Length: 153
Image (tube, rainbow, N blue to C red; front, top):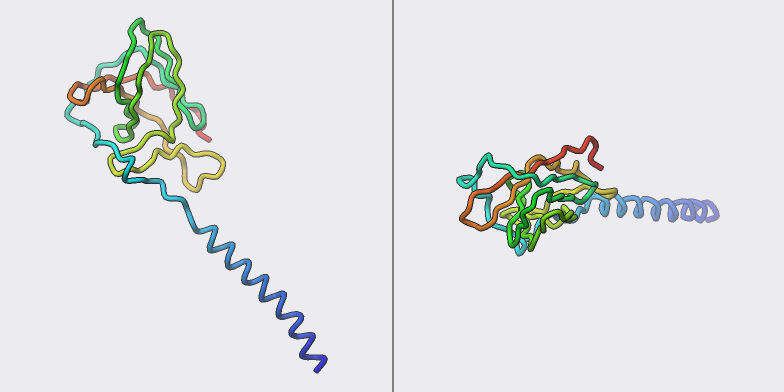
């Protein structure tokens, strides 16, 4: 009888440890979805793409982009496109202004969110390759000067 009690004492903590390990593995496999269909935007207007550029520099700083308007012109009520896929509406970018925007605020036509990375990321973050302004839905896009970041966190 004493032998059975010893085995039960050893088995019970082991069973709890195994159960906890299994729960942690299962919870670790859960990942927050990166899309929300209610936040979906329109698709990229490929027919309105142009090679025109303006002197607005775009710098990536971790999970944000910084737009530096080095022109004497202000831009109001426009859509900002990243990588010909992700879009966000911007109210205004005044002449000489520096505007900081979170990359997590950009969505595509399916509601997929731009993967900006960060400490808890599970996938490699997207790179910012091409940034464009579209003044209105039916007007051509204008490219911005994207300054490549050497290391994306």
